[in-house]
Image (cartoon, rainbow over all chains, first blue to last red; front, top):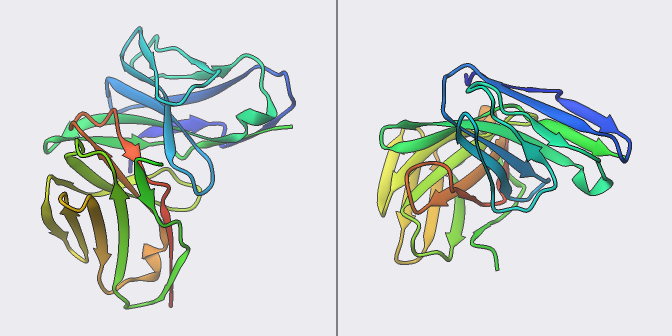
Length: 114
Length: 112
């Protein structure tokens, strides 16, 4: 089982609130990612990091921001939540194994903005 | 048009059936093809991967890639209720794992 943890599992919050979704991994992986997943839809990459102090935006535009101050920690922040931010957010890290970068996912945070 | 198309299902089969899950894609640069399995309220986990065209077998699972047709398949033999999950295909042009394009997933239900 992958050692990557996300908190909270579920979050219901009002419009305009600031939220931070936590993600930690104990595998020592340099590469970490945030994906957004809506029911029946593709996973979309919103942020990624190749190591400490490295962050990049993914292919899906997002109003969220991320930071990578420590290798094991990759939190995602929304300064002012809106109903359009309602979605499942999945954190992942990756390691090159047998010639391929394998993604290890957390269990996700289901965010509902009212 | 989406780069990767996957029938969302749900696909319901009896225990012991052979299951075929498929994806089509449009980007001819894709070289690495993966299948991730996602159980309810969990994150996806890598099930199988193949490089370029061909078949790969792992126990009850077989992954096939036909690059000429831009079509990939995952076959599950002797399906079990524990196989009930959403299966996501994913593909990329490189092996770094950071630029994957995912299908929308097929939900599979195996009934005892």
